Image (tube, rainbow, N blue to C red; front, top):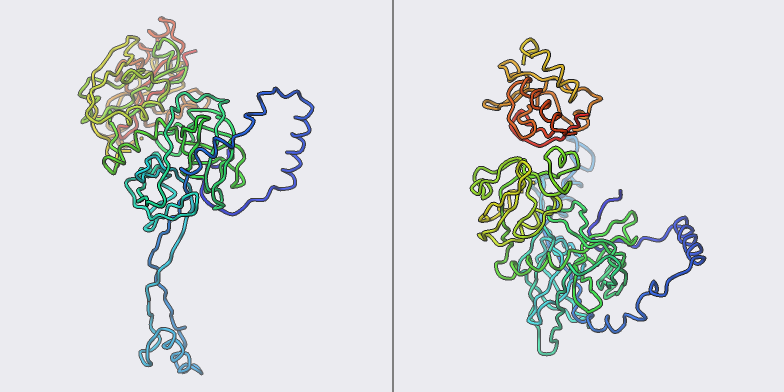
Length: 505
């Protein structure tokens, strides 16, 4: 898979001959197939483009840093011919009037770097939205209007986690500003038409059209990924520009591209407007983003885990693998092993949904959290805290042979009760309880799930275990209940836990 790049300004990329041949082949092939009338798209997008273009701006961000230059006279052996000549030459270059020898002289020099991007006006009073990576740490930002007018901008606030920034400019009587409204990104469906307007490669205002290719894309660029994917041409320099629906409403903020060439290959990503609006409102009000905090560590629920938990409706929700002792979840009674399936009335379809939903909920708000605990749905009332920026998320002869053999056959594990020797061998922290894994069959499902010797089985089927016999007894009970898989709570030697589902067949 190619790397995902932020859509920043860069060099032109020419189409290679081989790629041109491939495209030609597709065109010829496509010509032979019947094309539905609606596939041609709208007759014209000119009216829509004209309606919104004046609200789209170019962003020029300059960063000036001090660089220090050093001119050092070559170290010459004493008595070298022309030694005096070298010394005089370097003294003059370094601004010294003779004498002083050939030492170093560091003089500060200013170095400027520039970046170009896009943005759009959301308030005619002078509020502009762009990407955080467009402005970076710039100390001189200019907003360039469609008619070429340049306005100096100040930063209202920025957020690196969702890659947004809010700027403010002062409009003049000669140049009143035009704003565009946000639309509802949740109403957008794959196949809906969109247009992107921005500043690709620093060329200035450019319009491209396409459709929504997909929603809810996670490109692993941050903790709250939920991008709209579009095939509208987005290139370096389009970053921060708007993605419009056919009503002239901003439903996305163009942020990244997936490209092996550096140019558009029809895979671009935009932050949905519904995600962006909450962040933008907080940046305008507080100059920062204040996100809700639940205080849990979660992992995804796959089919095997859902079956092991007896989770009705199949794989869904976020499995709680850890609870912060000082967090809101702990106070509310949410436990390790709970599966969060609904938060504040919103279904949690996958674990990646939960951080985004929680973060967008106001700090201090009391919400209902629905969890599945041992097959039953339980509702917990939680008052959210505030997420801080820095939180980001044996001795062989002591085994019981019969029990160990049964576990080995069922799970591919050799187990032992915790002993002082094993605690020392695997650096297991004091107070850590469970059954120690001493060997993993390399051909087993346990090996595939990366269970390692030195880890501890803390729970089997959501019941605590302390001996290999406990593990065997619990596995036998689950088999009698018709379970095809078992959920283990596995702890590392230092106490970090995770859930692992293993097949019992």
